Length: 157
Image 1 (tube, rainbow, N blue to C red):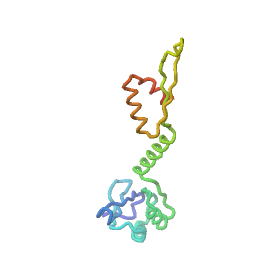
Image 2 (tube, rainbow, N blue to C red):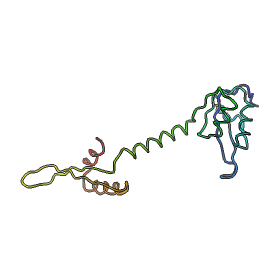
Image 3 (cartoon, helix red, strand yellow):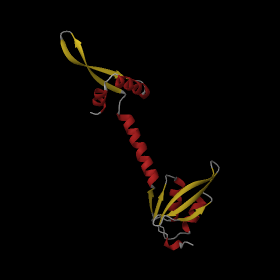
Image 4 (cartoon, helix red, strand yellow):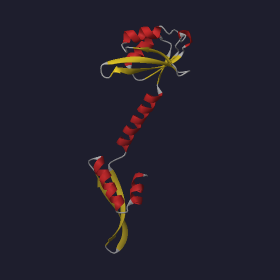
């Protein structure tokens, strides 16, 4: 039996009892990694009442659930709420992917040496693409033709 008075830092998450129909809530003691308790609900009223039965909670680790955030705030107004590791890393990864998609243009410049008139000069050819897939397809084709270094230089400026 767990002494509710000793639980001060918990991770709270939901789980499926029956996927897309019924969900429950689990509370894990961050200090020990042990399951403290489980609730067959994730409704605000049930969760808030449940949290109040643990009087000494100072830190909640949670996902982005608005219901859990409100229940935590109402039951333990001075407790800190932090994002759990999984959701913190997932959000960071998603934001990084979005940033990369916004900043890398679907353009590459390939330097090739072509003889123009009497001089041997480097000519820059610009390639523009409507979709990322078109770009990938063309890069594979150019790589197959031996333009590896030029492709690298175009992307790694």
